[in-house]
Structure formats: structure tokens, C-alpha cells
Length: 379
Image (cartoon, rainbow, N blue to C red; front, side):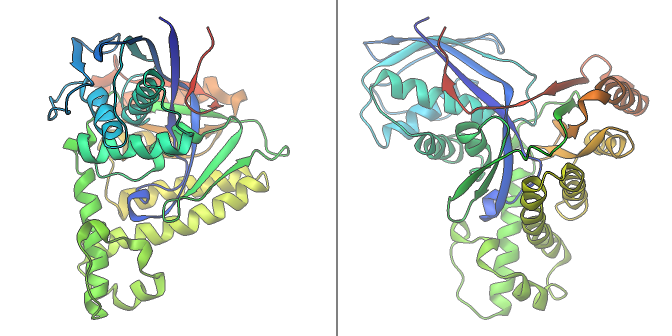
């Protein structure tokens, strides 16, 4: 194949479930992800083969995008859809795509979308900056795939930089890539797959987004302020002090969702300071606290993920961690001491499988490093 794109998976140590409410988020791109090898087709045809999923995909960029087919090819169609809103596409691609880790919690869907956006742009001589790639891929996931997410996943994948922590303000789209403090002890990123894969579109993900927005409506109604349409309503638009005035009067479910948002905003601010000063233990504690809030305030996390999280808290060598992705099935991630990887792997595996022996064949652990964002690879 003439071209090769590597689009990394991502992990988010702090800033869980707040990007869609215009909060603050952090993340790393990692050195595992999606590889797309492709040639350009002059007739606009798209022919794709996956080494991860069954079946091939064929369509053309010369016609409007069809509705979702509920198939892995939807991600290529989604990239076409979002690009067609901005550009006239004349040439297609023929290629092969492969993921390097099992699906679940690392935003593989966003990595795939970004790879396709970059490939179609290359084929049609469209020059896009990483931030533009991120926005187009996010639009494809929201409007075509049907997941009401924010920009966290795409930002980490498109903008990530090795040995840097990305901090993104999802309200202003301003971001920082903060270098690792030289005084910080070495760390790697542990990934612990529960053995369950999940589809966010079919989980409670979209429901939680609506609950957060309903919390804002509650607060604004108590304030006797005008309500905006739900898609224009965000917790970031209401101050914590205003929320505190009405939290006891609100339905408890909505108050918990809002509490998670405001406490996570504080944790990200503190986490950036911890990262800048090289205090990985402080940073790790905040990540554990984030997961506690995800469980009790955001109310996500399957029994399997909660079991992994509880095992992580009791395992020496783990600085901190949380559910990866939305916390519906999937994986947990952790910042770990590289010298204790063997003991960490043994401890988590034994503790988890003692509770869930049915996942013996599908449970897996990996250790990865931070990496640069999506890019063309010179063969």
C-alpha cells in the first residue's frame, strides 16, 4: 500500500464524563492504536478490509452518504459524511485497517474515524491541521454514529505528544501540551481489560449526557432563567455556587451528576499542578478519586470494572487509575511503577479472576507508553 496512517488509542487519567458538558479534560495518546494502509482510487470507490472484524466494505465518495448500516464500515461512511459537508470528494481509498488491542475503553472508534478522515483528506488533496481533523471526526461520531460525546477522545488522538499531558478546555477549545517534569519518577500506563467489549451507543452513555443537561435545566428553572434547547445546555454554564444553592431541592439523581462535574473540574485543575510539579503520587490519588466519583456520582461502572478498580487500589506500584472510556464494560487504566509491573499483573489478574473466573480467556493486561498523535508513517 502507498500510504500508512497510525492513529493511536487514548487514555484519560482525569476529566471523566465532562467533555460533553464543556469541562476540563486530560489525556495521553498511547503507542498502541489503529493502522490503516491504503492506496488512492481515482474513480471515487472505497474498498476496505479489516484484520479485526469480519466482512469487507465498499461504497463511493461520489454520492451522498447512506444511513448507518450498523457495521464497522459505518466509521468510514461517517468520515465521508463529515468531510462531504465541507469539501467535494472525488477520489476514494482502497485499503486495510487493523487495531492493535482489543476493543473496549480506549476510544478505538475515535482512532478509526481520525484515520479515515486523514486518509480521505489525503486522497482529495485536502490540507487539514490536527485540530481540524479532530473537529471533523468528532462531528462524524456525533451526527452519523450517534454518540453524543465531547472532544476528549479526538483531541488526545489528534493532538497528543509523547511524554506530554494534554489538557483541553472543552468550552473554549484551548489546550496545552504539558511536558513531563524531569523530577517525576518513570511511569508506564497499565491497561486492564475486563474481557467485556461494549458499544457506547447502546449503553447508558447518551442517557447520562441527558441527565447532566437536565441538571442544568433544574438549576436554571429554580433561578427563573430562560431555558435553552437541550443541545445548547451545559453544566459549565452554571457556577458551582449556584448549583450549591439548589442541590438539596433537585432530584438526587441530577444533583449527583452535577456534583461529579464540579468535583472533576477541581480535580483536573489540581492534577495539572501535580503533573507540572512532578508529583505523580498526588496525580494518581486524584485519578482514584475521579473513579470514586464516577461510581457514586455518575453511577457508571459494571461489577467487572469496579472489581478491577478495587484491586488496583490495593496493589503496590499503582499510583492511581480509573475506568477507561465511559465506564460501561471495557477497561481500567492506571499509572504504574515500571519496576513493579510483574507483581501488578499477577495481583490484578488473580484478584479479578477469583471473582470472575468466566473471563479467564478474555481478560488481559497490557503496559504501554505515551506517544505522539495520529500521523502518516514512513515505511
